[in-house]
Length: 384
Ligand SMILES: C[S@@+](CC[C@H](N)C(=O)[O-])C[C@H]1O[C@@H](n2cnc3c(N)ncnc32)[C@H](O)[C@@H]1O
Image (cartoon, rainbow, N blue to C red; front, side):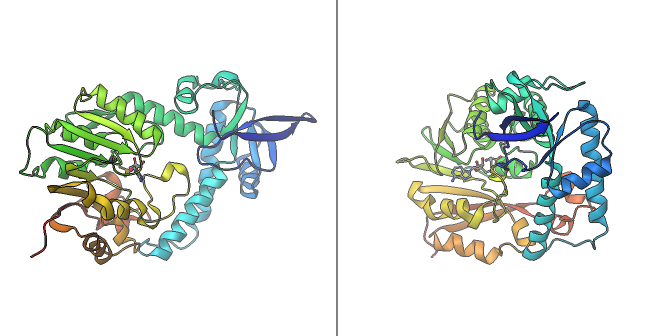
């Protein structure tokens, strides 16, 4: 296990310590109180709000209930504030601040682990495989937040079960921390857009920022024989490799860990689905959702012409959600495309149909209801 520091507390008048781990890179709480089933939800809520870490020694299932009770108290308090429709940079920043404050409070409920990922609490589940998948071998006692553990358990179940991808006629198994293709409308766009007419035996495609490997798999399903999929994140690379072999496309798809493009190669088709929101990720787990200062988007647009064969095409998947939230305008996006010397061939649009797009209680509903996801086709031809 990596990135651990120590967490120290007093219990029965003796100083104790264990390793601390947080996938979100949160430092350990400075004050720790050992608690069990006798604490009231109100007391736990107040301690967590003050920043005290609550190290749980009671029944594991009661800890889950306590977490829900604390969440209810936070949400009740927030419900008293006037509701804001998130439609501008300012309101989006306020929304994110409130979300991260909520997460910080909930992350104060802590669970102890013994060696070998065993939880020494009554009615604790066996989470050995879920923890092994994310943390690897461990030989020391450690402490994590209950929320992190619940995230690991959920991801483990999802990885086992997989997500049905209609246009792939198969399943993708997302790993912990890897962007999961839950919203499938962009995959529909990718499945329906005609491949460039230059398609031949040695037609080559790149999938830049492959995540689970879903786009590479779809290109392979569309009979492209040479695909190079890249990602800079090692979990994504492992996940994509497993999905590609499970689907039987390992002869067609090669997966490489690198920043954006595979070096010294060119392709007939280059596809990229970068993170859609230009904002600072609040933890390493958000690198696939937030793209600070459009780093990946502009890195892709500014350099893609160096990697495209003369008659090749680049396909960019981009939602206008950032535009609906006032984080970017379409004119700015078009300017980035033009400044990169790319010629827009076509923009194909689709309306999202995932459940959150019709959830009127979501503070982002106003932005979500108008959202359009697009596949932009570019080539290197001159504009005249
Ligand atoms: C929005 S996710 C898309 C994942 C996948 N292509 C899909 O459509 O489901 C963006 C992906 O780009 C990867 N990424 C971000 N910056 C990158 C970079 N500079 N080079 C390569 N991959 C990058 C992230 O790790 C993430 O897997």
